Image (cartoon, rainbow, N blue to C red; front, side, top):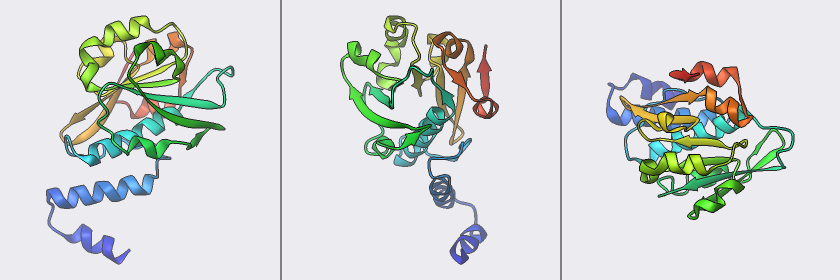
Length: 191
């Protein structure tokens, strides 16, 4: 704890902000809603924080009772997470275990309960989403304007912070329910 006090007294710098963000990410432990954490574009820290956000999106989403004991979290497109997303493997949420899968075939997307669409496929989001049947699949992205293409939750990096917006109308159409706690943390909720 003495180290933390000394760290906080140092002059503000990019390194100090990065260290604080890492420590905060460790303290939230993938279990509490994390909003507006400082991150740096393209870095490992950015995708550590996004992985923590994804865990919280899953934790604060309610699936229908017919959903099985496993939540298949699929990454579609180029994987910028590396091993960060793998840290969610076998974590449990509401008595369901998370299984991580990297999908290359769009026909396999219907096997997922959560799909993260990578920036590399952002130009085709509308077609992928229109091919998904109206079923309880939480769709996530981190691409500009992904909400307007039908993504349910979109993360953006703004001023070195991860923020997110939610398309509540699409969420409700799918049969999912998002906690009001998560809705309060969103920068914008689209009806």
